[in-house]
Length: 172
Picture 1 (tube, one colour):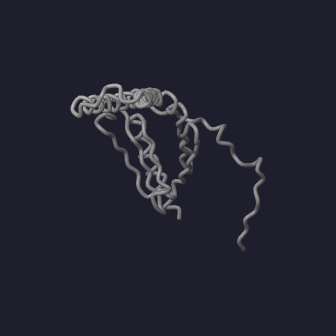
Picture 2 (cartoon, helix red, strand yellow):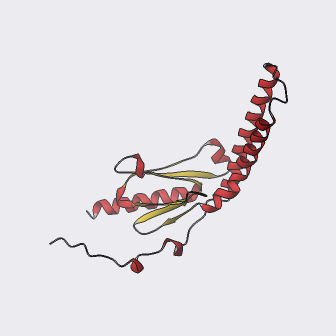
Picture 3 (cartoon, one colour):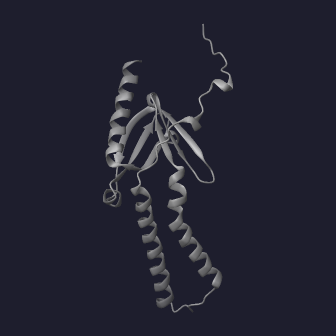
């Protein structure tokens, strides 16, 4: 007979007691380089538009203030967001936390994972980091992507997760 007994709230494990692993230290520098390149490209495009289209330099002070604030936020953001991201690999699942204003913790059970891959862009390889992506059954809403892992850590996690997925398939 099917039974589904209640569990007292105080018996539930707390996520704050977990040993959260941070992302690779190079990830902050990698994002800083990427954001600096974006700021430079936007600056060059705006300057070229002013010169080519013969727009008066002092169009609107609000535009320049907004552009400056956006550039500063883009360059400071990695120092704010990266310390608030982390992951925990447990026996039956993986947890990932993220967010500065809107925080979230995503748990992906290994028995829901169908595919695992690591990837890295040329900029990622320059900073010796990679992305681990988990694809789950039931659509893209349950997928998980962890950027900023060390290359060897991402590969070890990929192999570990694949072994867990294989063992969960064999046990069913």
